[in-house]
Length: 312
Length: 314
Image 1: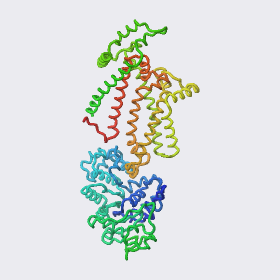
Image 2: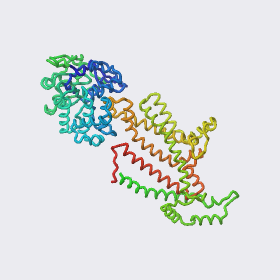
Image 3: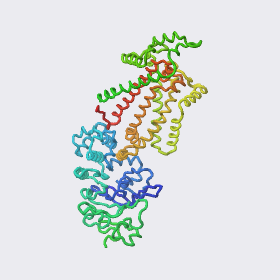
Image 4: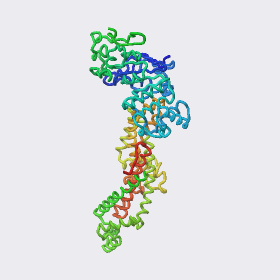
């Protein structure tokens, strides 16, 4: 049973300099109770994909394709129904907890807001529940902390609040955007532990640039490059049998694998290279890579890759 | 908090002393003489003898610093002196004039807020739409239009042509009929500035990450704007509205003069014209105290709007 299915999703932003192809024909499905990692460098379109699912993009964006959830296409439901989806069915934990919490609202009230909205609880019960949520994300003395403001929390604590907010209405899918960005190593490990625990029975789309985090949390991983997926397999296959040169490069840049950077820069999403989008940075590139755009092929059961030379 | 307020009040003392010294000397060195002004009748020049008598009676024959110290000593004992003109206590005059100014200020503030806050919010939500452009052109007009001109136009339209409202005057203790035109005149100018600020701070707030968080929770756009964004956007607006109210309370000389409103601004100008030293001193000191008090109130109110601010008497 899949929790979310994305079919040929395209999110483009028309700008005076040209069209920004932030998400370009992406197809993937997230199964119930699995953690799916979407991994890629900054600016490859990961966050835009998350925001497209939630329909939180600016009105200038043009979206094509399908986002199927519980039998309906989320891109076609009306705004009122979409508001019910947000927070209740799908919760998104946005990046940068420091700026993502409202500075002039009490933390407890910010969590209680969604509970009141979706579960029809009154103010007092919603606040009770918010305190329970703070307790669930291991915030000490939660009833006191609920009355404090975000600036009274540390970075790691704010991230816990964001997670509590996401979990508050018991959604079936959580989209977590860079939940460990900007945290100390020890705090990062705690947050990973926490996410692992609280999302055990939920589907999660983890958006990250950090393969180390993905390795801790994910069942399956998709590598995203310049707006499209380049490889997509189980965690084990990605780490043990990476097929795409980008995946190999990404793995090679991990601290425990030598910290070797991928040469070159990510291309601009306005002016994408002809042929394979990765060829200017690829050491195996041949003429066909420069001329033709490779399709996603299934190499073995459930292991997809977008490369002409994957098996050669 | 109490420490902070006490400290701020202590800081006022040197500022107020300086204000009074400067105003005392400026009016002293200005040409004209209260005794001569007062003793000059309709039929020619003043009688030198009565001028001399008046000077001695009012202590104007003493050196400047002695006059100042006498005045200061009296003020510290709660005595602001007597008007040379009416011979009534200065404080009574100020109390009456301030009542009139206060009424006018409150009504103009209400008018100003009622126009500016909704317009600023609508402009921000409908950024770059015709509505936004219309609001902001209107605001530019409002800022650039001089008070006296707008006042005269309103007077002409509603007073002279339409006969809806009285042209000028205080009426029966400043009733609504009489207050409307001067209040609109004063209110629109500040509304224009406030609307622009409201728009820009609303736009800034709407671009913040926490707005996206609220939307991701499934909060409706009305609450996103009216609660999450507005609470943040109001912080700079409150400062400006507070300062604005301070200016309003000091009395607008121009508007009070045009509309014949017996407020503190007009009282000050009339006293200056008549070289009524005691009255001028009293007015200036009163207005100065009022202005700093409003500033203090604005600073204190921050604490309640923005939880990130804490005052400590350091």
